[in-house]
Length: 466
Figure 1 (cartoon, one colour):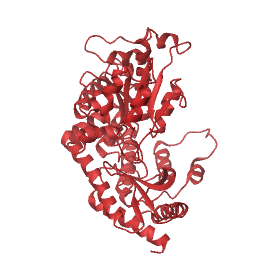
Figure 2: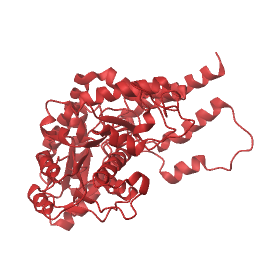
Figure 3: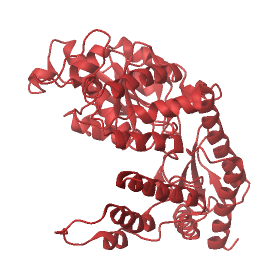
Figure 4: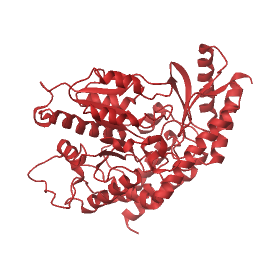
């Protein structure tokens, strides 16, 4: 056996061992400081044996790894990194392709072409749309909003790509008050500012108030970008996409942050939540959530391919030009050298198929509802959101004064994390402390959901004396 074969087999053995232990893993045994101590040493002057390095890496890292690949990790909206996607990602690393253009990596470019078409079909978005394979929804939002910025200014005679924003016509950005923080970051990166936006009032679930939007539009003139949301990060709520024609009548570019909620389009049981979403101009979503690809994988989807390519294409004399029927991956993302993310995406779409992805989404949503049903039967525990998708907002001491409920909620969260049967974290919702659960793992069955609910109830009873 060659040295490379032995090395790769050892890495696969260590990876398989970690994954097989994941369902039984609890919290990391090492925090940041302990993890740092495992690796903190001066730069070695002499090299080390390949196998020893990989084993040392595994030994040092594993105590500080969360069980994000396990069925009871609900801390954030994180998919389970399905083994098929991981295996495809192994090959991606081994192949070492730079997915910058179709000449440097023909297979990577070709797979992206097919995977992009499949994604548009699965998500029921306009077939003429272009897809950029990015790191995640943060960069997907950035990419889509960059195309939006360029296009709304071009329509009033300003070339932002050539001239920048100095003396450019002012762009009005309309955004819901409960939009995700990464959208505000994208606006900041693009020079549009995270504070100079018009924040629209939202309802109890975080949805934009259509009446407030209509009133605001009466005061707006010039270039407009509107940001809507499919899946509020706490409640899972969707904006009413029936407002899109109202925005379009004002000449607005409508962008949808659908980091996880856009996947509702893939299931008959949830697609009513996103009805009308296909009328938008751009959409951002993640593959490493419900498609279960490994990190990093997201998609920037833009209806107007020319606007997409105009703002993202990197040109140089040494870079080959894409001819008729050819596609350069770097024309749709803010990177030239980058990972070939299309391989894992293609593998997951091929493995699950449309029916399998719909079933996975349905299972996660059903598991979330089951947890909500079981918890709501317990006196003192309240579910604060309409469980329409996969998110739960949970309050402990719901019958207590606000400050006492906050304290009990914090204590319950600490107990849940100390017990380690599940992992979930706290958040603030409408000024109050809550436990937030995100059910996004392909392994979270009804049995796992029941275990999760039982562990939450046990933790609550332990700290409340119930």
